[in-house]
Image 1 (cartoon, rainbow, N blue to C red):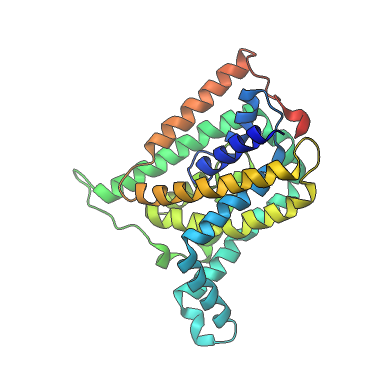
Image 2: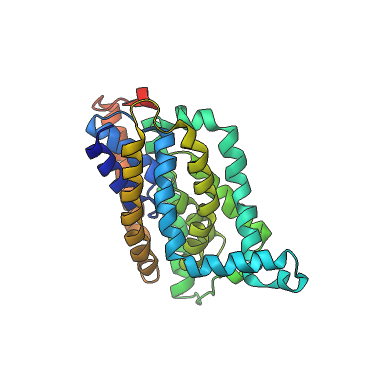
Length: 290
């Protein structure tokens, strides 16, 4: 992998990680469209450490408060009813599904799941799911004729059951094209949470899963055509760009709909099917390095 390729892929990772459009799919598609070799699951997982570092910094106050309360709750029983301490446990509980399924389906994640036809399908299907979830949220928030405004849940309403559902939604992102934030935010909206609450928990929930995945894949870094230097460079680019995107996205969702992302996902999925169907792209383009 050249330094130019690593720059572009790091840029794509930073731009797409927090948006509900799937960063893993865009890394895969960028390589396929450019005629490069697939950077592979290991490269993707490691560059995500950069974007998660952006999450750690952006939510540093929330994370420090949650971690402190969680540790105190281990010895102080009175702290166990504290919301921040409970959030610590809920992040742990919500991380279980992706941890188990990630290990169980590791071979599929690094192989068959990277087929461009599957990516096109997940882009479209999850785009429709996100669109439905967004419309339901808008209906509750705006109300309308014969409908009253319905109050949506916040993170203070989050319990073990909903935490696990969030976790299983996140695990769906093991398939490129689903999108970690897209799946968890959609799940949250369908369960009745506000856009901001669903997005905030989605980002917090991703921290242990992404960091664990990145550390686990470190052993495979530097193998094949992807060397350590470009991988680290891409990770740094992803961090800088990712921080800017997450700051913008958290402001965007407080007043705007997810529909632009829905339209983009569906359009990209259809375009991908056309390109593969007309043999412009092979469904396995660049997989030799994957």
